[in-house]
Length: 343
Image (cartoon, rainbow, N blue to C red):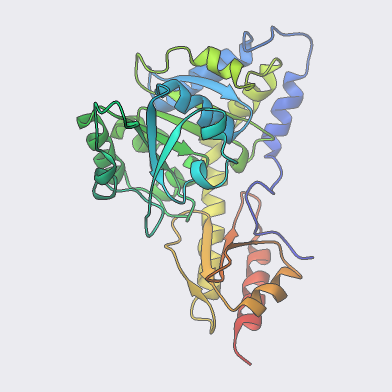
């Protein structure tokens, strides 16, 4: 079996993250976040996202989304998201089952919501028979590898606030988006009207850990209780915090994300123009989506790991990581060109 282009979750952890865990493994420290590492990383989050931001560390992305959205909604509220959103497709029904959150999904061509696509869902306000739209949730970068620009996010934030809603970002790959746009994290969150986000750490090099980040004062009353109730409160929090401390220090995440993005561009360029291969989405971050013949996919999967995204169309997803090597990309691209080309 060759290398893996299945998921950035397949990659190991950044060496600096492992070192940070080892450094934190000394002596005793107060539990449940009452430790020096958690205090330091909370300050780092305020540095990244603004003085009014509050970060709550959790174990995983689904937990971050469920806790964060529960903190923003009432039981009768709904969350608007793209049909392809991780919330809707890949969280096992957790938002509905564990969070009691109704999802209102929107079909999109590229995974990105727009005000025009969202507007038809903004109806029946005040109607006691209807669920009440409360949050617009976008994914950055999206499940299709595309990236929202700051202006696109601002437009959605303006719409949300004009309608009395909140804007949430599922940022499992927020670092990849910021690196692609060459902007600070707050430029695609706090500064453009985002109210809350799930900040991803695992895909960019942590062993485990994500964060619920509330960006505005007065949001998320009771979030600390919801985190505990949702089984996302770590007792030995210092080990989660130490990882984030290493990731956020001097924007260490940026180098890792830039590399993953560059490898995706290299891969897309490597298969460009190959007979039998059609790249289907803009390669904005660290994912490449393509359609190729079914038999070619089967042959490639005998040697390489990657996911079939849409079995009906033959679309596949190739994901690059912080540790994807250039020679591995080149070898895979050469295999794709050879296998996919008609005989």
